[in-house]
Length: 394
Image (tube, rainbow, N blue to C red; front, side):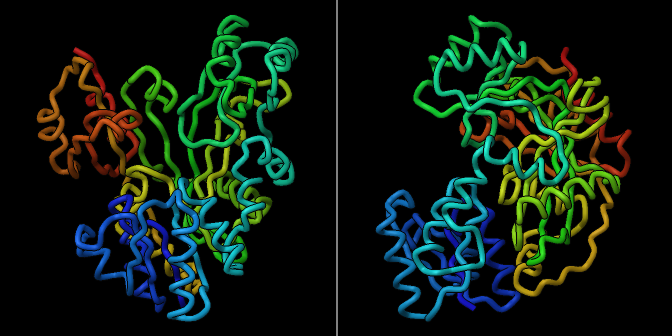
């Protein structure tokens, strides 16, 4: 089996996907954008061959790489990156090389649209916020009059909290609309709810073989726009109701043999037309592994290797159960904040549960904090105590 893995060199830990693929019998053919002599030993060890391109944005260059692999090794069976940045690239290559083990370009473009997702949530019986794909300021203001403030303005295609704004009145909406005029934006009613995720791996039938859930301390929008503290942790327990909701969603979206990263609202108050306090509202579905530290937190929580599990599921359609032993999480702190306890204080108090402390580059710090303290805990009470101590200000 010939598996072309796009960008095995970045993020730095993605060579682990290649290790899993090798273990379950694939020939791993990597396309990388780093000179060969600068690649990590792990990338070289777990990829049968690496083809170096100058840029993944140069489609002709990447196409030639896959053509070379096809000529040398025969038919390509898989093309995948597990990376939001290259999902469209993956799909375009699949179309051109007649690879059917993944989404086509037309399908991925539809599914990456936040507006396009709405009908699939409806098929799954999952409510979503009212929305409008706004093409003019008049349309935006008309929608605001119909729905009322606050509203959320964000890119229809996009990842994370970049260019996502909460608008409280006409003046703010007009300002933000003009700032983002170059993009196709979607306007949604504001949902008073806590964001959480349901993430996992499904097989060729769309049946979930592994599921994790991430809860947040703080929120991503404020973390990016206001540079506030942010944290997230894996839930020790996932209710049958949550499992059923995400399984219906995976089936409705026709996701197969993939990682998925699904974001949800849990209503803080009753919302007429949507649900009652505690009900789950669909936010968005992503067709790749959750980003940042999330795969590592999955591993810590279950004492497992989720990179290996992904390869096992898609190549063998099998997977042993992985019970959750810990709630694993990170506390992302800001250099500008004056915290009551130092990093060293936290490390000492939680010495038996502390895993490591990471000092992030500016690019990563924007969404995750300048300093990330990572730990794993046996109870939710202990988890929340960790966050209280980590984020308490002096």
